[in-house]
Image (cartoon, rainbow, N blue to C red; front, side):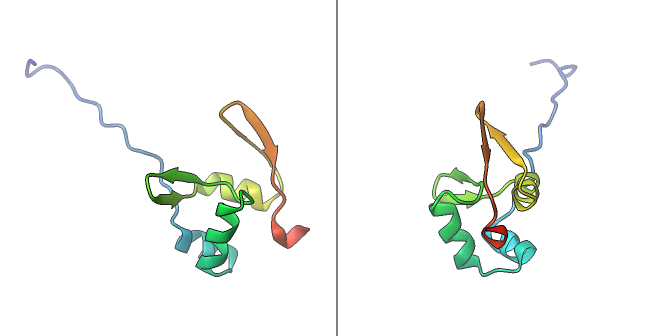
Length: 81
């Protein structure tokens, strides 16, 4: 590789932990984990970790449609049911 080759660093998107989601929603961390495991809150599994996209959480909270992997879903937050 030549010295002229430029490397571009790609930063992964900032993801929230269950603790951060809990703080944002004003609920317990265990509630966040239960909702994620039940498929009621948008999340990503990374190995043994569960992470949350802040933009998806905010849209979910507002009752907006979420699109992932070509699928569109509307997940209504528990607070609005």
